[in-house]
Length: 178
Image (cartoon, rainbow, N blue to C red; front, top):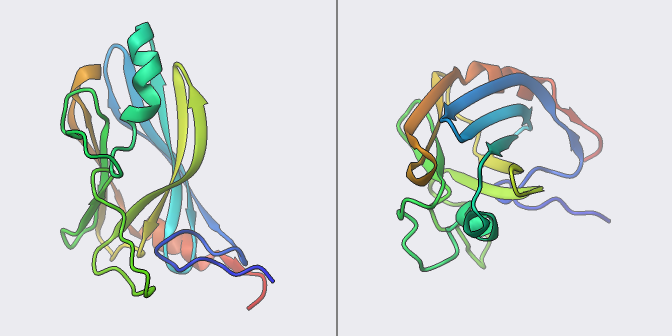
């Protein structure tokens, strides 16, 4: 028997997501593009792919890059210019970022704040596609994707969509079995 993880950990295994056809360039410099595409909505949260496209990487950057994308679990200074800063913000002001420590509760209690959690992806060198899970579903209103990456020439940038796009896709999700 396959058991789905708690809703704040990742998508359920027994649901086909509703798709929201979203494709956004959040930020762009001469050397870097940060984009979001393919929102997959579920009854309690949603996932999307963060696309990173880079050119003219130094050998040092290429070696370091996998470690510069998600620093929530390390004690280094995640605000150093080398690190990608990425997050989401709900219409009510709540937010979640890759700089947040993921909630962990051995008792399995629901977190009291939104969660942005990496749950797959891959890449190397000049391209990376990273899957993220967002819990819970956002309230109606503007929903923002925010990023900054000073070392790659990207100041804090923000792109908003109507959360209704995500909520409507949730209605198209199909539960396969209880």
